Length: 294
Image (tube, rainbow, N blue to C red; front, side, top):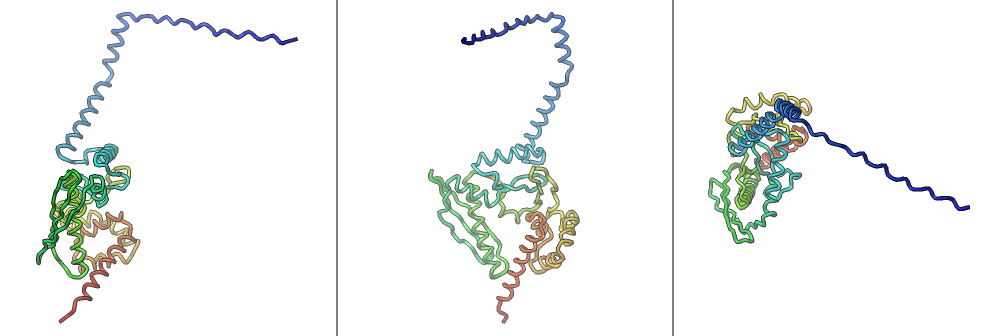
């Protein structure tokens, strides 16, 4: 015999929920309770803090007033507005005149030149006996043209002079690129000419570890005192660094702030620091050997 089909179960009827209207007295009590909560006051305080930080950033140009998250967001926003890749670190932090600001690296100039279709038309050498003076000319497809000049003092001889010549040419290109991109910011090639400048050591998450130690206006003695522990750790790791530091100051005429700046740029890693200073000392020795004595 065929099996009888089971009758489908009917869905249970939904119970009607009757919402009771609150009385006027209950509504007044609820409104009074909400008024006592400090939520509105806290939001106003947060808004005031944000506006105060934004005012410090816009008016004073000081990134130190921002939190690590806010600095990261600001960094990303600047890169997006200029069509730059933030992962390539087109900007780094420095402290200039007691303000935390960004400066443009070589990567920034290269990307800006490509993003804005800036062509370096020609570079004119206007050097004299005292200075390397390079004038760069550039243009864009829109027909806009601009020019920029870079001046570098001549010193030394041989390879050192050649490096200064190339530095002047590179500096002119970067200044032209930033100008045609409408970006008024310090370039990496100008750092050695700034007074009151300090390297800002910032972690990957944006936290500032140390600021305001490599200021030339404070004198070399203060610089080594501030970074005394880091320098001693370097000397403890590699005994060759101490005589190399002394040789760099005596033979290359480097100041202590330059040495600390090099250490910061190489993240206090003794191997690349030793390699960098060693190459400079070898270049200086080769230049001296190439000089023919009368």
